[in-house]
Length: 293
Ligand SMILES: NC(=O)c1ccc[n+]([C@@H]2O[C@H](COP(=O)([O-])OP(=O)(O)OC[C@H]3O[C@@H](n4cnc5c(N)ncnc54)[C@H](OP(=O)(O)O)[C@@H]3O)[C@@H](O)[C@H]2O)c1
Image (cartoon, rainbow, N blue to C red; front, top):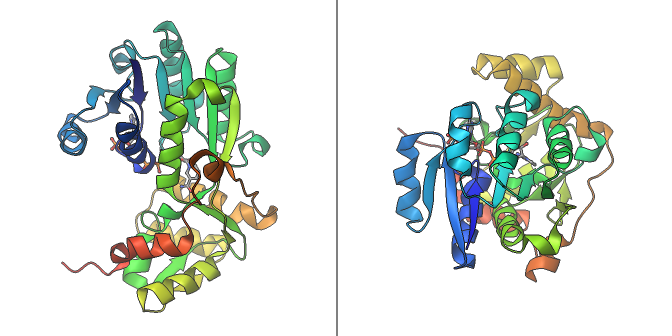
């Protein structure tokens, strides 16, 4: 039996990884690393066969317990944690000392061109410490529409981002979870590789807004404000300054970059086409409705 620890297990990607792992193999133990005790019950209701361990990136005292008897780690960088030396080095050193051999790290497409982003530094650290690894590098999550951008869509019928006409490659987090589960189980087959994972569509936000309007039956407009206006708009809504800067980096910089590369890895691995934007929007349609209290 292989013991796999999943970090970020209550988030978008982690939940999908658990979902697919728990369907795929009887020869693994899935251990969800959970920051808060209250989350354990929620996870176990849906996935009664997994176990949970308290794990907090910011609390070194939780590392040894969570890493006990773990061979394979699914490592995710929570969006709020950017300090690699402060948080990831101690964790990875602890993992090494505890005998973890394999790491599937959720990175990001294009990481190799951007040495300032934390994912780049984490990839380097994993190599430096001598783990076998798979760097899974997905493109832009379709689920950004149902998370970060949801409030503006629900309440203002708008997508507001400083992305201009930049093209984004859109990938479904469910496809990422499916691939990650396969990589965690059949690690050796793919080890020491970086794998880009994308959907088949490079689209800009204007096109996505038009598609959404058709699917939702109401007009969704796309607005690309200048950076100062975007910053103040989001500050007024109470968003953390650091998070706004991340949004700017993610959406403004692609205006000056080439169109994202499209990868066929998902289809090669699963024999299926990746989720299209249209089917994602149809599947998640209800989430975009205005919430009434
Ligand atoms: N959005 C995109 O388009 C995109 C594209 C490519 C790559 N990525 C990468 O994907 C990652 C984000 O994945 P996601 O969307 O699944 O994130 P998410 O939904 O925000 O989930 C974050 C997870 O991390 C956990 N977490 C937060 N702080 C923690 C701590 N101190 N200790 C332990 N766990 C902690 C959260 O647990 P709690 O429930 O306790 O908060 C949650 O399970 C980032 O690294 C991002 O750069 C994103």
